[in-house]
Picture (cartoon, rainbow, N blue to C red):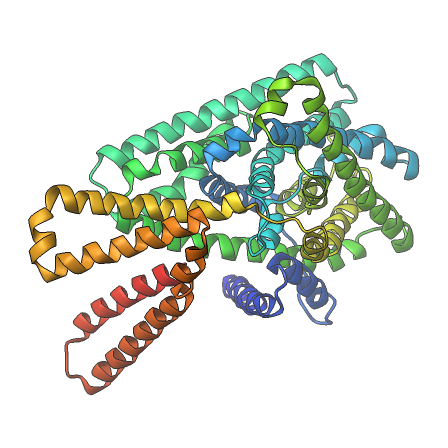
Length: 530
């Protein structure tokens, strides 16, 4: 019944919201808590069996999640760290898939090499949200977060391409390395081309047609689906189409979006991404009890043993890969040694340990067909599903929970130069306003009180930022009042908000005027808290 499905969906959304509040209270990354909660709920007697359809994950969930990740990824950082990003996103994915193929083939009875490559392709890509949700409140070097974000954008595409080739080999019984290599390049190139082509059309619509903030926001929601479906229709990489299109539009967004469009679109997208991620991660936990029931000829004990060993292999392989990937290029290239600082062993380890699996692995596992071309059951499908779910659970819980502790123990912190960037930006912005006042409003700035106060305000901002940058003794004195001053401003917002509430209750002023002032206070508080 439609109402039963709607009730189930609404209930899941409510549970996701409540569990996320709990994760914030416990200071645990919300994907970890959602997976564990879903697992616990799934074993409660009477809870309806929930199964995810793979096409729903690929078509409904994947495009907006990838688009949002691409949108918030800096193109400059992505290009600056392209070498480690591509080594992880392509090299590590293929290396992981190959290693797991041979391990599974040797360890699991009846598990052929093509099935091993299929399993390797499924569990090889780390999840973007899992890692960034753990790292977002920790002061780690920008290089680490930029590499992890860039890797997660592309490794989904490379793993899905390997998945296609492994599936084709299972169905046909043939695999030609040269043909696969040519197809790989074609799928990647055409996926990027389609994504950029659609992104250019969307860019022209945003820039030259008379859109409104609501229309612009709606188009941003439609764009990833257009890119993904168009590329997949021609059997190219929909993932790379979404990623390339999202990176392009993000880079050009300042040219086409007004301030109110950005405010509205960001709010809509933050809510959408939160709900989609929450539903997917809790569904991972809810699905596992059903998979256990469907194991069939494999005993649960054997399946757990295989899954834990595969999980350990995925973790070890990544750590073994990142160290040569970080240091070998420096040995062979003088240019790299001159341009890039030597990464510390601790920071390289954190990159290696941040390999939590998630949404794409789930979708790929569910996309394994139920039957072969001749109608026979797909070999080892239930075991592949079980191993995938355990790998996701194992890496999320073990690595996700231990990552903050390891960062503190290894003392991986953002360098001072990164911390000073904010002060440099503040100084440049304050100086630009002072120059504008001097050039265009010099008389007013000397005679009109409002202009005088504005000039003095930006002079103080410039002085504080400059003292922080120079790090002299006066820096502590000049900036020591800033936290207290910000707290005072926040309290002033709350006082005005309480006064507006009194006005609303007394019906002394029109409601629409009170709502306008309330919106102004919301924007002011958002600026202060950010």
